Image 1 (cartoon, rainbow, N blue to C red):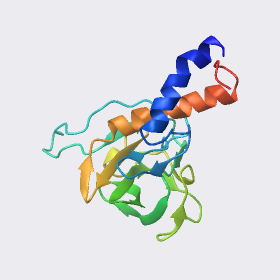
Image 2: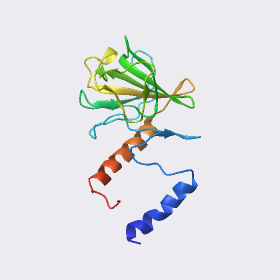
Image 3: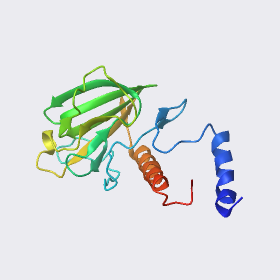
Image 4: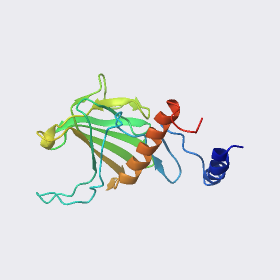
Length: 183
């Protein structure tokens, strides 16, 4: 066993004993955790934890803004169904997906919807649902997707889910390109 195997084999055993090993780029809802697929297909996406920050008009920021190039593909964060695909005065173009176990993911300020996207459609993690924009009250701002996760009807901080999903996605791209010691 090489030095990488010696280093990572115990981690794989621990992960398996703790209920499974997450595969980069895949998403699922397990018994106790929501595993997210990163919702943008742009390695240059940047985001900060702003959940719970008060806005100038007194509203609370209930998500994380994912800044990316206008037109970047926005993908389903997990398997589910399209609950909403519509326009709102503040939200602009937005999509809400339901995933089971009380989870929903919200994608707000889209520039456009994916062709043919309809309420009730099933989606798989990674399916294109729209494209980055700056619609609604984000008009005139840098293109971004305001992203939220809801559990049983309440917004929860999506930052740790996004960070984990982004790290897994980048690692999977590095592995595919042969840029890591993992094979």
